Image (tube, rainbow, N blue to C red; front, side, top):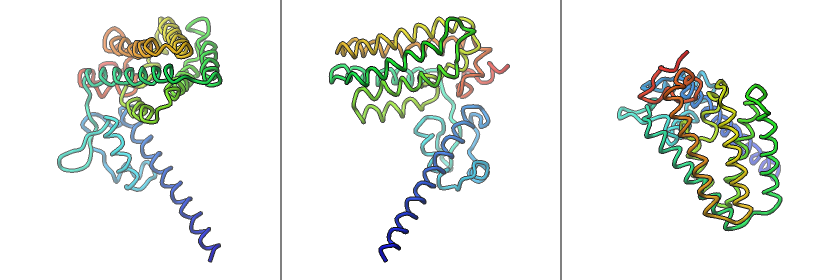
Length: 264
């Protein structure tokens, strides 16, 4: 009987793991289709067809749809189901500002509460690797590596605050369209003057870590908020003179005042 209990527990564990995998596949697959424009603004999510395409059942798909409603990519319809939501410029700007506010709070908490030398050294090591990825010129910049390391650094920075509440809310905001720290990097990869802006961002990174190390909470918070506002400059660029590159920005086609203007 004890063996049967163990097998039952193992079976439950496997089932839970498979359920989690199906949910993650549904979230990632649906999110990708929306951000790339495969599902356009106003399109209704067809549960049957999409579940078949993603290789999941309708239950994890419905859970994924609820998650993407929270992320601002879908909205519920009065008649049931969900459709792809349109965004305004203000929606995106507010998401970026909110991320900056939360990152600033995390950095202030880190400075005020104190962070171990090992964790700060880990941030320094990430920044050293970012320097290598940036190279000495735009031609030598490894954008794919930079995007990965930039995401790692921002995640590590958020964890320094030691607040599960802030970390959870920051993760939620980061998943909002174009609010994340790497949201505009794919578009920047094709712009010659990009390296300068990335060097400014890297200088911000080092200044934030230095402020945390020096236990300067107000400075760390202000720097983090200013750093997030670099994304606002990028947004303005891709909605203005860089519009021809805007199709490279995941999710920008969701903006009601952009549409397909940047395609091509």
